[in-house]
Image 1 (cartoon, rainbow, N blue to C red):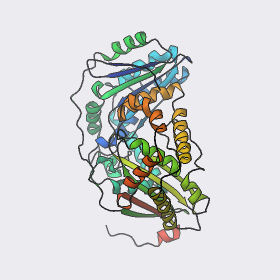
Image 2: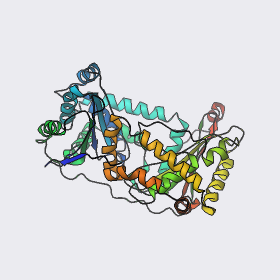
Image 3: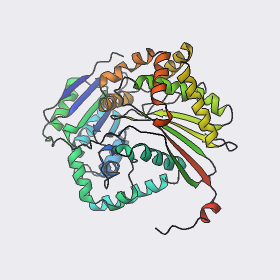
Image 4: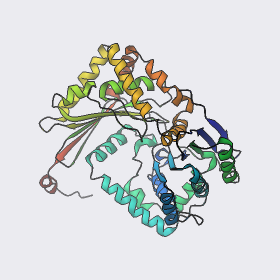
Length: 436
């Protein structure tokens, strides 16, 4: 990739990334804030996600109901997301209607109301979302695995937050967090589509230049110590299905081993999609699909490597076959990993895994919305140059590279193993009540 973009930073610290694409009369705007669940101390977990909800409750100039109708009426779409390292809001609009959402994002950077009634209403919504997630076995299992993996680093909690914090936080907590982190010097504005760079830059400069920079936002500097041995957790709950989740500590996105780990992921479970808007590719040629699913040990198997600012996890998740046990599936996973550690994959396997990873990455960059996404996302987690170099680096990975990272990272002492054991309603009801 050799795409050239315009990168300008205003005096107040707002980074502006612009990419002219004249293939369709569409513009996609993303505003990225360097704030996510990693910036939440104990007592404030879930605050970034809650604020994301409140960003849609409007300002004096743009009341919530008016905005939704206006964007829909003009043929546009909008949404927002919160993750470990970031919060982002985006709009994709017909090119001649972009002025509305340019003004919207500049306004809600500083003028969101945080009406006490709306805060309480969204408290109910977020708690209901949290409780709904708790009905899903994989959410419960993932939460336990993540908490066990990170005992020090703030990646330890789910983005949605812990229930006691969601019940206890008040409007002033949210409002202070908003004014601390949602500032121009903590933001990236990435826009792609059918526009003239000089024209849209002058519009942006006019809207944002008078917004003052805030103090450098505080960061939780709590690096996770190296794990000294395997950690295991068993979760019991209602369902008819057993699940297995195996996670390994892996380096941050900018580490040289991240790209070989992407190929290892593709080889073992099929390529991970780093783009939330991209499609998927069949993983039926992967080693673990053949070893687990085709041998009726599991119903499915999927892997995932997270692109994050700090070291995170590579995880393998299985739905266990009704006639088999999680331990049998785990033993087969260990066997397949040891095969790679003992003998490097063939050149043909690596070429296929690389081709699949590159294809998935390419599919996730095709639309104007995805182009705007990648400018901001890659800059948050690494740099835009990182994004431009991914395809070339994926094609350069050798069998020995993949064997080496398997030997270094996919070790039992670097592993967190989670097992979800289903219980019938009768079993659950017969358990003694806790005195706590």
